[in-house]
Length: 231
Ligand SMILES: [Zn+2]
Image (cartoon, rainbow, N blue to C red; front, side):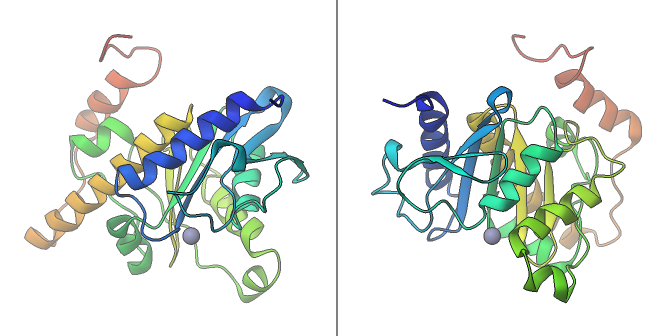
């Protein structure tokens, strides 16, 4: 037993959803779950196969990056997760995958425009793309700088309204209010990326959906006036 059993269990279960939802190939993916009040988070260990992973393999760190529970090395993407928890108040879980259709947009250097209501149900407008990283950013503190370009991209965006980003030439980072919800958002992102890719193929001049349709679909599920679902 440790003081961190709750976030370790939530983190473990959320990580197991990645292969279940077919969001990862090999070990390219990880989920972290934070307890913001104590400024700690649990994350998947580095390079451990999903089939062999156990709940006690989850590594717990504080928001300054110090390991406080666990014997394995944390995921190499840990500094990115940590910086996002510091910067985006209110998020509890961060998911990183190399899911293929989202990566296709990241590699093509394009955000994902909101072409339909499936997208609008989850993301309030385009899923943004970060700028390419500089040589200095890549060579020193790469994983932390990856988060810094995300934070820079969200200067005029609300991370609770657009809960995903594409890191240029790399792939998606997605977040949410729980481990399960963040992985659901990562799956939704992959689905809308596939739909967008097909829609652009059918109509290369396709434009995003109208503002009223975007507002209707996003706002009926999110925010103070929401009425979708069972509350
Ligand atoms: Zn990656």
